[in-house]
Amino acid sequence: MTKTTKATAKAFNIRKIFKSTSKTLDMTKSSPSKMLLLFSIPMFIGNIFQQLYNLVDSMIVGRVNGSQALAAVGASSSVSFLFFSVAAGIAGGAEIVASQAFGGKNTERLKRVISNAAYLMLASAIIMSAVAFLMTNSLLTLLHTPDEIFKDAALYMKIQCVGVPMVVIYNYSSAMLRSMGDSRTPLYFLIVTCILNVVLDLLFVWGLSLGVFGAAVATILSQMIAGLGCLWWAIKKNPYFRLKKAHFRFDKSIAKDIVKLGIPLALQYSLIAISCTVLQGYVNRYGAVTVAAFTVTGRIEQLIHSPFGSLGSAVSTYSGQNHGAHKDNRVIEGYKKSLTFIVAFALLMLPVMFFCSEDLVRLFVNDPAVVKLGATAMRITSLFYFFLGIIYVTRGLLNGVGDAFFTFINGAVEICGRILFPLLLSMIPTIGIYGIWWATGLTWFATGLICVLRLVSWRKKRALSSRRKVQTSW
Image (tube, rainbow, N blue to C red; front, top):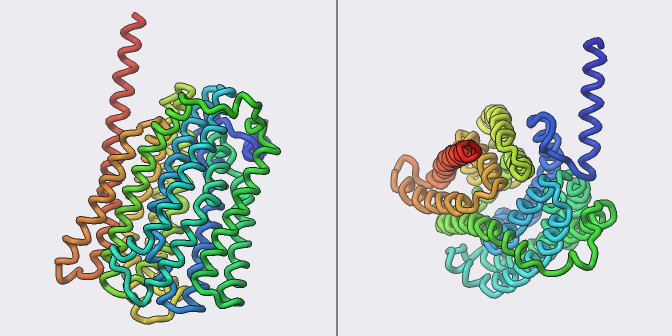
């Protein structure tokens, strides 16, 4: 066989495997690099679309209604995520349990996970959205939200809270599909949703002049459509979603497994959300200009999070399937491959942030003060992108193998960093307000270091367990 023929055959196989991801993808076989790329690329594309429509959402609000309206949206975002984190944690726990069942070829258990995850996620979403709605004004007051943006921030947050159950539908269906290696179906519906969200933004914010109210409603409506569409397609096309009456029974054992992994994840997300909320409260003290700059840098850096987040989710599913199949050596091999992707992307983004940051900020606002502050802020955090990537992939691996306690450690480190670092750095005259963004970078550094130390500990425990099994067999 010639080199050309071999290359053609290899390309054909890749296309064949990639095509199969519209159904399921068994990640316990083939090259770890290939599996991670095939799974993460559709997720990355989906995340880019999602972040782009978040960016467009902010651009439209900022350009049409000004920097104060943009600041109002940003001031309530971290608080909204705090109450969504419980449902997100349950989704993460269910995805891990489902991926392990899929990797272990346990079809009946997988189907019971699919039904029980729906019960748990919907219940948590309804409860938390009601609590968040009732506490909106108190929380924004506690965070020292500037008076000039308080009304709009409260309105935006309340609408987001009402829409949490609708958003959870998409998170549920996409989590279950991803556990089986299908990262393409959620992508298709997400792309449609992104386009719809932009159209609704233009209609509500620009056309009907509904301001932040229109932006919030556009987001909720578009995500609801994505969720219903994704769930409908999964039921119609994915054989694992074709459940019998017995599968719909509440299973205490499976619910316990989901909660066992989901609650620590929810605590992790909650702690991260709390840390972001506390930091937002600290930012709010500096006034609307700083809040606007903080909002813009956050929106732009969501794009930086996208490839890291996609790779981390791929590593989580990959690790879950291989751990369920008792192939922990492949877990570590996949992790090492993911590190090369992190280094490449972090190095690529450094010159972009150093030379193009002002132009990026101007896409949102023209206020010179906001542009100057935001541009310098992005140059600071870009120095720590590598550690941000380390957090995502290491956390993905440990979540995938079911290390529930680590999730609490991870969240605790983040909340300590986001609370302590700003207070300490802002006391240094030469740093001042930029301590907000130095604190973010240093938090990534500290959290990444803890992640690696925890991974080393897990590997040592697995090696010790393997040696004991060998000795027992003798």
